[in-house]
Structures are given as structure tokens and as C-alpha cells.
Amino acid sequence: MREYKGIEYIVYYFSKMEHFNGYVKLPDNHPYQKYINKKRKVFSRMLEVGYNKMQDINCHGGLTFSRKITKKNQKDYPQGFSLGSWIGWDYGHYGDYSCIGGMELKGHKWTEKEVEKECKNVIRQLSKIKKQRSIK
Image (tube, rainbow, N blue to C red; front, side, top):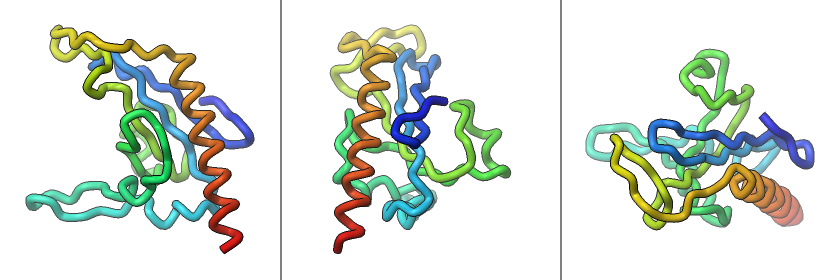
């Protein structure tokens, strides 16, 4: 786990598909806290949809993850999350390098350094959103 401007983030290598994921912890009093763990029933399955409400976050491929990590569910996540609310995104989109079941999909192979840079960019965006929303 790393930290930038007092905010935790994780650059995680998803070895099953050979690409990175980026994760940022939301500050406790951030306006996006209200969207964490929001679910909607889709084809008889409850799916996480909170990250869809955070569309003003600009990251590669858009957000694909939003969860509250608790002592009860922390062991289910190998990324090393601390307790709290996390958002994330992945680098396994069309045009990205990935490897699924031994089949390579050619494309840009994101580096750890590139993902770290984007995590820091998301942290800056979260700070700006918090300031804008607190003024209103």
C-alpha cells in the first residue's frame, strides 16, 4: 500500500490476466462515500453500481470497483486493502495487453509506474471534487 497527499492507494498486478488494477481509498468525509456499496438487481443478481455515480472521475476505462472493506470481508480481497471505502479501475480493456487462459491479447502493456501516476491523478481529482461539493 502506498500513500499520496495523505490518501492510500494500491497498484495491484492481477496475475490471472497479466494486467494492473489501480485502487484509491476514499477519505472518510468525501461526498462519494454515499455511493459505496450501492447495489441494483440485474437479471436476478445484485450487482455493485456505486461507481457508476462517480462518472466525473477520469481514469483509464472508467471506474469498475467500489466497495467498503470491513473486518468481515477484508480477507476476500488479496489487494491488501485497509478498512474503509475504496474505488478502482483496471487496465484490461480493448487496446490493452492482457493474457487470458494463455491467449495473449496484444495492446498497450501498462507499467506499474504508469498506474501509480494515474492513482495520484485520481487522488487529485477526488480532492478537487470534495472542495467543489463543500462550497455548494
